[in-house]
Image (cartoon, rainbow, N blue to C red; front, side, top):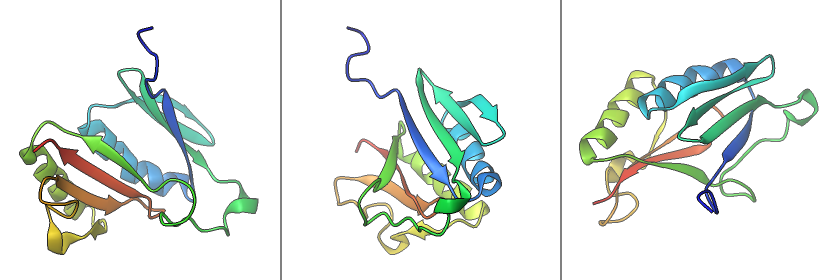
Length: 133
């Protein structure tokens, strides 16, 4: 089977759909994703059959705060072709005033054999952009 084991989609509940869209849209477009779906309560972007869905968290669950060290999603990692692309994403997040993680250890926060950038989305979900070294 051609698709056996391939990731189909990831769905993320977000606390503020407008803020999340402002964050995620330029980031995913830079990675080559295209807007796939949009409706009153969410939107998604797709690349090569895999899509990422963002849904507004229902009011009753908004008080529960996400933390990547708790049970659940730890982070999303995106692979790019080279170090220059990773560096370009670092410029992008600085322009948006986003919170870079481990900046004192950039670009080897994941170890000497890893060239990566780590930062957070509006809900503090950790994002990694990395390339093969």
